[in-house]
Image (cartoon, rainbow, N blue to C red):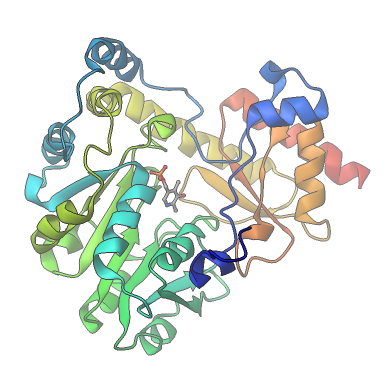
Length: 363
Ligand SMILES: *Cc1c(COP(=O)(O)O)cnc(C)c1O
């Protein structure tokens, strides 16, 4: 690194985001045929993409020499119709990650704070660092529910956001809407409810966006909608946020191909329902058959506690057998015995259960 030009301290201190390992990499390092590797590490949709999304992409291909709309308005309109929410309450971006980056860019200044209940998705902390803001942590209760009193006690004059992930990643539990409402009504800062996995659960906090001017609900098309490779996220925001968001958003940040595919997928009710149904059934099968303690989940993944084994050992042994899982050691506050598995197709789930039984028996 240059001795003269340094990155700003918040970046220098930051740990790199750890993503799930990919199929090509694992196939290469273990000498396995790519076709025999299954990835149950990043909570993608095991059914593949919606055929309507794929045909929309083909149709959009001949116009890719033109810029997409500056603000994804066609997609915002399609989302407004689908969710029956005014278009003035919807923003879009390159993945929910991109939406969060824009929102935090709007609100966070150096030294501002965001409150994060742990354990959870680690990217919030990184995005706060981009603005030299400070993450303040609250610890969830032993059942991974929120400790509301503790969260409220950590809110200061400098707090701009509280992040609530529901269902939570990696634990899989939903936060009751009443808990979110208690927090939102008690604070002046914004409450960001990350509902990346809400399609697999049955309670959403969406209604609170209409009721409170400080609640934002983030969503993604990467999970239930099967479009992780295209990077499409959106959020339901109070109307006053929209104009500020548009000023800070990267122009044209969702590609033409992505917009077309997203609109195509939104029209594929059959695919969506099948995705949700496959997850609900697979989740039940895995919870009943995994030979370790599993946590109840309302998402498309299950967290298992592999103790007395270590998570790294179990994840490595699975990888040797061509199954990629997520060792949760990199999640702050999660310890070293938790492994997260994405619900797959029935055949993938069965192969996983057999591998885990084998690993458990051989350890
Ligand atoms: C997957 C995930 C996201 C990000 O989704 P993208 O839209 O793909 O950026 C956000 N939050 C949580 C909790 C996730 O697990």
